[in-house]
Image (cartoon, rainbow, N blue to C red; front, side):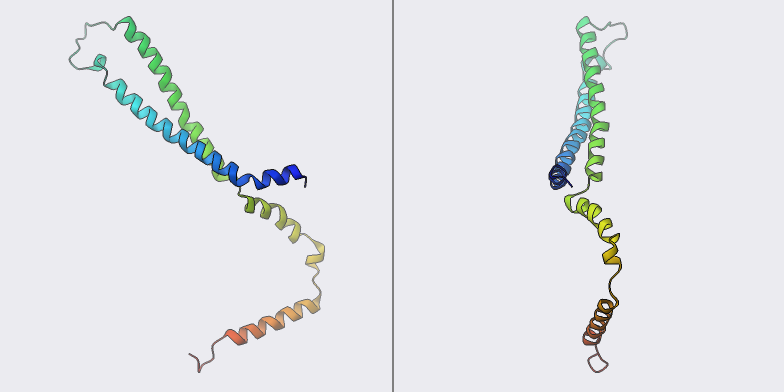
Amino acid sequence: MSSWIVYWVLMLNAIKATVGLFGGALTVGGVLGYVIFTVNWMRKPQYSWERSVDDKPSKDYEDEAKSMIKIGKWLKRLLPVGILFVLLAILIPTTKQACIIYVLPKIANNEQIQQIPQKLLDIGNKALDEWIKEYTPTKSEK
């Protein structure tokens, strides 16, 4: 494993936090921005019930409407991008998880560890039996 990979594995927690905060900010900003945009857009006098049907919108209104539609489209795009970043933050492993993902298969597939001598297993079993006897309450202790 190169030092470059070790560096990036150690930086996973910071990357995960940055991506999560950025995604959360984009998602919340997109939703709030779109809600504020829609409320302000609908409060314009052009949408008033008092306006007669024969009134034609002015040129300024048409230009403003085109720019507002562009803003609305950009705000709609923030939500999926924010959700994507939040999902990335969920799926990026932490430093500990990445180390376990890398090291555990190497330990489990190591032939030396798989061929533990029988004497070592006997010692472990004997010690385990002693601990069980020592910490198991007897009838008089209950």
